Length: 199
Image (cartoon, rainbow, N blue to C red; front, side, top):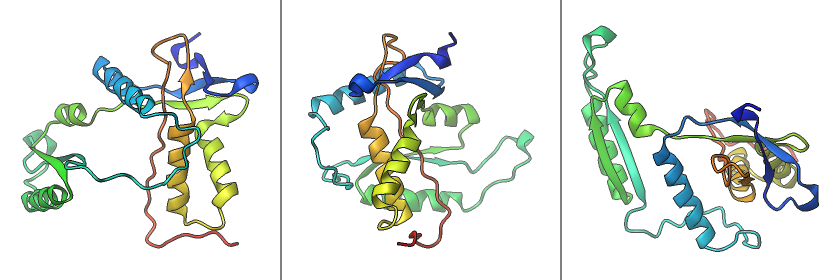
């Protein structure tokens, strides 16, 4: 069986357990595997999530709330045919000040090659699908739409979908490469107004 067709069971599914299969697999380095393992360990050490009431609000009460990477590409190799991007230093400086004031640890990288940008931003992803129940994302989306589709704005709905996929699903497998994997949807919006479905 191909690597991308190996099956894992949904956590907590009990007697109704179906097998999940990988829809998409990451091109990961051992570093990313270690990083995600540490993240999963820290989530488990914080206690179970089954009986927690979700707040849908991040705890931002930290001296440093996270890391902000700014890639400031002003000068390009001649073979690209691109000229100097005047004004980009001003953007980078403004972003640096804004995110630093918000509590982020800000690092600026200037004139990065494609390889350097890929190295800075490399991340793996998993997309899981249960042949009996469908993909984790669609299960969560339909569930949240049924619960809140007519009373929440679309971005609030999608934020709750992200939460449900991230917190309510985890793969189980004898293969350590596929065991205890999580999934997080990526929301991209070009809306310029709030969107509410009719009641």
